[in-house]
Length: 352
Image (cartoon, rainbow, N blue to C red; front, side, top):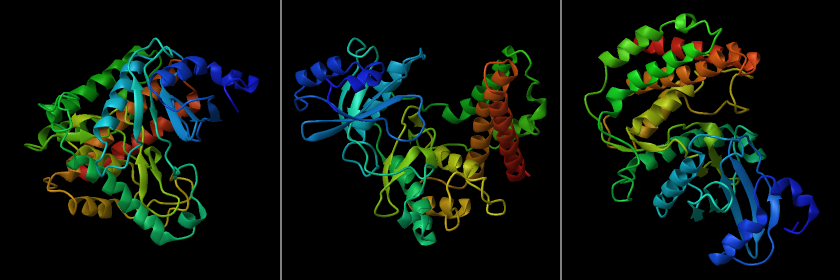
C-alpha cells in the first residue's frame, strides 16, 4: 500500500507519513511513496512501523502516543547506543538515521534496518522446534550476545557519559528499596510483608557486595523476549529493546538470566515462555559459557543473580500495588506478585 492509500488512515494516527516522507527526502533516504507493511508481531509499548521506500526496507521506532515521561529521551538514547555498536560483534538492529527533534512526528524517533529473524517467545519455526540440539545452541547464543556486549569499549565508542559507573554496585539495594517504599502511595497495597525474605535478601546483598568491577555496557533487561534469532540457525539475529542500556557492571545482565531462567527441577509445560523447552542449557551452563568468553571476575556470580531477583521482584510488585489501588488489572497484579514471591524464594535459596 502507498502513502496515498485510504487504508493507511490507521497508520496516520500513529505516524504522520507525509511528514516522515518529507524528512526522509531531506536526508536522501530513497524516494517515492511509503509502502507500509505494518507493525511486527510481539508486544511493545513503543510504536514500531515497518515499511519500504524505493528499494530499501525500514523500521521506524518512536515512543507511544500516550504521554510517557522521557519517551523522546529514550529514543535518543537508543539511537545513540545503536550507532555506537556499529561494526562491533554485538548482534543489533542497524541504525539508518535518527531524528532527535520532536517537531517532525511529535517525538524523537529513528529508522533502523528490519531484522530478519524471529522472537522465540512468539513461537519457534520448524528447525528450532524440531531439534533439541538447536535449542541448546540457542541458549548459548543468548549468552554470547551479552558476552560480546560486555567486551565493547564504551569509552572508545563515545558512551562514557551514558551512565554513572562510580558507586554503581553500592547504589543498587538502596535504589530499589526506595522504589519499593514508594508503593505505599497506592491505597490498598498490603505492603512488603507478603514478600518473604525481602529484608534478609537486601541485607545479604549489602554485606556480600563484590569489592570491585570493570565498568561496561549493560542491556538492562536481557532475556529471551528481547532477542531475535536467525531463521536458518541458532545464532542471534539481533538484541532489541535498548531503552534501559547504561554503564555499570555487565555481569548484572548475566545475573538477570540467572534470575529468570527456568530451574531444571521445575521446568514443565506452561511455566516457560518458549516451547518446547527441552534442550536449552541450564542456568549453570549459561554461567560457564559466559566465563569462557570474558576476563571478568566471575567469583561473585551468585551475588548478581540475587541482585537480579531483588530488583526484578520489586519492579513486578509495582503492578501488584497499582492493582490494589484500582490502577491495574487485579489478575495481572496477582500473577506478577506470585512471580515476585518466587524470585525472592529463589534468592533465599541462593543465600542460604
